[in-house]
Amino acid sequence: MTIHSRISGTGSFLPERIVTNAELAKTVDTSDEWIVERTGIRQRHIAAEGETTANIAHQAALRALDAAAVSIADIDLVVLATATPDNTFPSTATKVQSLLGMTHGAAFDIQAVCSGFVYALAIADNFIKAGQAERVLVIGAETFSRILDWEDRTTCVLFGDGGGAVVLEKSEKEGILSTHLHSDGRYGNLLYVDGGPSTTQSVGHLRMSGPEVFRHAVVNLASVVDESLAANNYQRSDIDWLVPHQANLRILTGTARKLGLAQDRVVVTVDRHANTSAASIPLALDEAVRDGRIQEGQLVLMEAMGGGFTWGAALVRW
Ligand code: COA
Image (cartoon, rainbow, N blue to C red):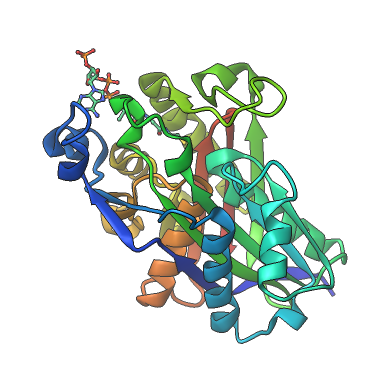
């Protein structure tokens, strides 16, 4: 029997506090018009003092477990994607494991910035297909508000905090059809954090050459989408739902146009969540599953691009 892996439950969590563009315009030289026109972002959620990536991940995980109707005893692996861990170590995944009361199995973080969830899903899928795990909690969670330079209008308006999770389990039925991961470290200086334990011994702030990242994103995303379709003998017209990483509405609409996909087939949350990095895909996925847009049997394509550069896609039969 071929071993498949399937998503059996999704969950997400957003911090309570919402910060609108108008509120940001009080502290940096920006405007609601500029942000909406250039990015489609209208607001973002920001973690409360003391509310950490692990707390957010924990809440998202509880909701995914509930949706999958499984208990923590049934999970044998936790893979958590984040670029904003609670601490340098231990991993945020082990903190979440402890918050969930899980003392068996294994838990680790992975770091691919905004592509983190696709990377984590690929890892979990491979663990299951290799027979090393049966049920994996895959989480993307971030508190980017903690690494933003709140005086830099070119970056601070773009990001938000949040988390999403899925339960991925061994199945006889097809689910994850394939995953495709890429990276090219030559572009590390276009999107990075200017600190870290081994360089500055500080956390640092996010720095980005926005227009250059934009240009690479459009090309890399279109190519990885085509790669995942070709690997499964599908056409662009076979896609029922595109669940993309949510960085900029112009990137989302541009990708949909390139694919010949109607805009209403793209799950969009960037207007309300901004860019939540590794959390953006599972947040969007959870929304579209819970409101009934994504239905059993449909073809769902997730794609992302982030610092590194890293980029990737996952094609899923729901
Ligand atoms: N409010 C007002 N003006 C702003 C601003 C803000 N928040 N941020 C930048 N500007 C100004 C710039 O200073 C520049 O002014 P100038 O022409 O006087 O120099 C002008 O707006 C245009 O800036 P530019 O950076 O060329 O705008 P853009 O249309 O490329 O939009 C981004 C900027 C960041 C929104 C866009 O490049 C982008 O989304 N890039 C991809 C980012 C991304 O996806 N990152 C995450 C990948 S995971």
